[in-house]
Length: 181
Image (tube, rainbow, N blue to C red):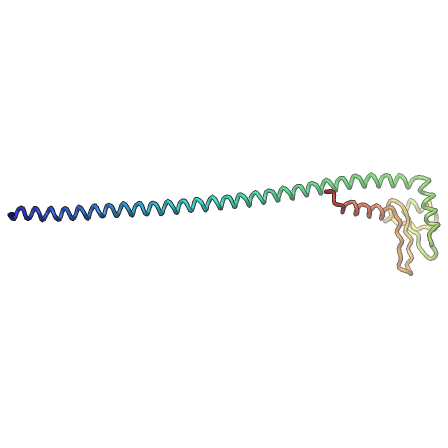
């Protein structure tokens, strides 16, 4: 083998090793690129999964808040309707009681009820309208708007309240506190 052939063989050997190294570097770079791409794809997939889970949680939370708000609104509407119904019903009852207090029957039953009470040493309080019916024995009390009477024994600290006002108020409270479900 002459010098020229040796030199060409040497160059070919270097080129072959260089090509082999270059091929290996390309393979390594391609593998590294695939690995990086796969890691990025997995990271993106995990981020997307987290985002979907978070969105579902947020959607579930929003749904729960919306349902809770709707339930609260329903309760408020029911309460408002119940109050309106109660107001209308007790306004009618009040009107009927006031109409009843204008009858002769009421005047007689009021006089009889007061006469049946032990009124010695007591104040008898009635509505201003009823004071005219009962006479001088009764003290007009503007807090009694509908009718009935109160017997007050100040020295004993006793008040017997038999007014329609108190009875109606008690019935209203009882009615309002009932569960209508």
